Length: 138
Image (cartoon, rainbow, N blue to C red; front, side, top):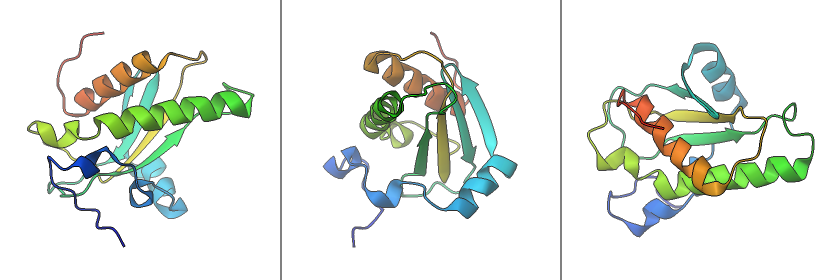
């Protein structure tokens, strides 16, 4: 079994293994009930705070509502794009002085329009910065 602990500069930081995917229904319910939330168009981020900086990456769930995108093809494509932008940029969590390293994260895509990958990636980086209380520019 692969360890979830990844050194900061390791090439493994660019992977998105199954251990980093949030699948527990119990944890997901708890997050929706008691989790903290940040909104920055087109994402809503729900997360649980972890006081001690954990050496592992947070478990992540990515949601694209059927209400906004009726075709599964569109939902799956957006989900893949968000997953890829998270995979490429999750190392930002450990590159700066982060007060909060979340234990669990849920990214909900709230827009009703499809966006290009570059825009999704830029917005995901901005919402991660908002998580730390850093100012953002759009």
